[in-house]
Amino acid sequence: MKFFIRTFGCQMNLNESEIMAGLLINDGFEWTENPDEADIIIINSCSVREKAENKMYGAIGGYGKLKEKNKNLIIGIGGCSAEKERDALLDRFKKIDFVFGTRNVIDISNLVKRAMKGERFADFSDKLNEVNYSIPKRPFSKHHAWITIIYGCNKYCTYCIVPYTRGFEKSRPIDDIINEVEEYNKNGFKEITFLGQNVDSYGKDFGDKKPKLDLLIQKSAQFDSIKRIWFMTSYPSDITDSLIDTIAKEKKAAKYIHLPVQSGSNRILKSMNRRYTKEQFIDLVYKIQKEIPEVTISSDIITGFPSETEKDFEETVDLIKKCRFERINIAEYSPREGTVAHKYFEDNVPKHIKNKRLQYIMNLQKKINLEENEKYLGKTLSIIQEGKAGKNNTYMGRTINNKLIIFQSQEKLNGSFLKVKVNKVSPGPLYGEIIEIINNI
Ligand code: SAH
Ligand code: F3S
Image (cartoon, rainbow, N blue to C red; front, side, top):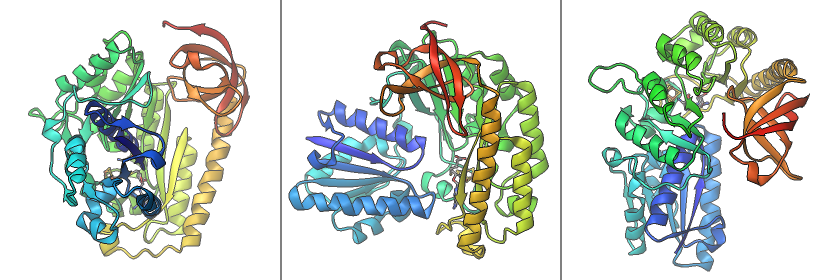
């Protein structure tokens, strides 16, 4: 029996798809990249914005058609949209066999077997207590592993559906995570990324209520094979001095922080229920840049949040100019049913204004990126090769501060440390050539 998994959304979904794939393979199912030859199709959905959700509905329609050829095909939907829509998905899409939640991913084999017996059902049980390091996974990379360290989010930003679809924060026990890092170390993995909606909260739900991401980084750095430790996403006002210090001092800690700001207007930040001001955010960025000189910082911004004026938007532009992010994920505000903003704030910024502001930020960011990237021209960077970047033997790799570089190389060097000289830059990646292959540093 062959299964196919389609993943939408964030890295947590990707990680959960790796876990589902591992569990199904362990139970004798066979993985396929081709939905046409699958007996089981699982859609891991995202509900963060309407666009993502619509893409997913399109996919359900497409895969549903495959049932005309293969009557025994089983279709299951998990992830955040499933959590949000629950039984309604079964009512709306007759071709779906089962829906499941964000907290019972590790039950996937049982869910599939129930569907194979002819049951049509929704199951949203909470199995997070049963998650542990020994659960099989099928990592999509052979040298870089995702490790979810904290589930859920307690922040309740007024626009965001995630606290409703992923529930309250729950940290995995530190020993369990370290056991998982040890397994990856044994298997020769070089990079790990700790994942969570808010990784800075990791450990706050334990007895002493202290955040422990710093400790986790320090403990993971002891493993020989593990050379780089990444983490995301950070919540600005939760970043501790001790974490900044750990990133600065620990050689293996990636010098990169994803720090979503959302807006530069204090009025909008308040209305979003973000717990910092523009000034506090900029001070934090300056502090991080001072303590970790080679750091790069990326961010998320929403344009056209309810009641956002031109003046509010100018505050955001001013913040971007001051922070000079490495990258920005920009999205137009998308009202999500069930959130405070959807219920109480009118979606009153016209679509064309949302889009105009988004384009403005994209162009500004491009200019900043090009200026920053030009500083790298002629420099030699230490990178780990990640994989193919396109056709004609072009490969990509990353520095420890997340600069992406493209160069000519070979498959066998995936996962290797290389020295690459930058000979061309763009607002996106850097381009270069390999100067030296160093496997051990
Ligand atoms: N803690 C996670 C948040 C997940 S949502 C993180 O910071 O990555 C990821 C991003 O999607 C948010 O930072 C926000 O910029 C964007 N987003 C969330 N809800 C949105 C909405 N209703 N409309 C537009 N963008 C949204
Ligand atoms: Fe969403 Fe805010 Fe949490 S953006 S995931 S509620 S930090």
